[in-house]
Image (cartoon, rainbow, N blue to C red):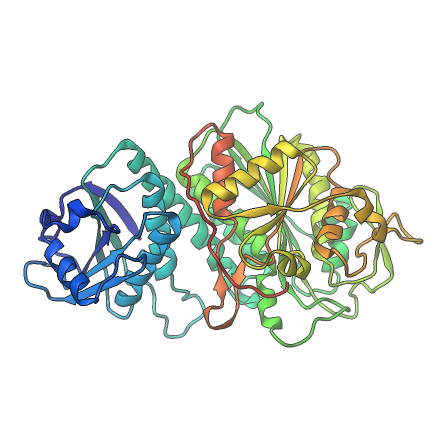
Length: 500
């Protein structure tokens, strides 16, 4: 899908040959509703009869209207122009159009359009029109190919915002694609091939390690999870070098459990199909690298993805088994369904070799995080106040919000083991915190943060599908670290999710 922006007036835009024209209408702007543009009379009449309201998401839809060349004309109220109101307007407008074969849309801002408003318009329209097709025999791909945004004034800031938004959309859709694929179409090997493809298209290096290399590295925790899987594990290393070679990189570690049965501690059958989403952390890392390839910021970034299935084979690790991690610490595996932290701990140890400025792991780690924060904010845990604040700010500014959770040492008491240095689970209380405390043991040599995206990575029910979060948060953070000024939005998007 291609986006462009033009400096236009509405009286000119209505003469364009478009499949649809969406006019974003402000709330209670007297200058606009006083008849100074050709759509004002329509709005005034609709307001008088109660067919349109000065309320975000209110729409007025017309077909083949005289004086407007586009087949469909949709006027959508953006309220006071906040992120949430603009998103509501775009979603409402697309709901009117989605059943039609729309290839080319004009989207005109009847009032001044801010950079954050433009980014919200682009990302909302992309999200609303997204269509999964990969495993359908009769797919219905997105028909929308071109979006021409127009406004009375087009600044350099708006053009920069459009470039940022297009890169973000590309990254989010990569994350959605790989998270939405069924597990037999998103194996560790396939995930590695996807990373190689992204690397070829951008200024990246990609290295893929298999079981022999991982064994040689001594990643006993990662290997333990993979023991029961017929699909061979893959450890994916992506490197983006946008800054000087001596600049310490940011390392992103994405949990890549391409399907999670729970292993011997098997999960309930109901909704187990959604455990294909247990690699959303890995998918988000791929999405971030896709966006980095589009924007090419001046920063060095490493992506690490430990990818495997968690299966209950006869060779699978058993509750009570003790394994030795790459760090040398021994782990008593009390619950094989707490496998994400086992693959991540070895990846965190591997990250030390890059002498990173910061390491951020991203994982659909605990159902407890869903209970704590629901589907609005991802859980944020960090041993570094400055890093935590930077990520919190990036989340708030990008609309992909997170919330910092505690890491008091007392929470680690439940992880004590008689037979190993540490157990992989504690009790039921504060499950997301004790999981983070486990990971913290392997992240003492660098600035570290952990994002638990179990509540935000995908939706359940009729709207089942990956959200692409937290690509927006991570990209915003990285651009800020690169010294760029990423576009700020103001509110998180809401989703519903299930326990990983």
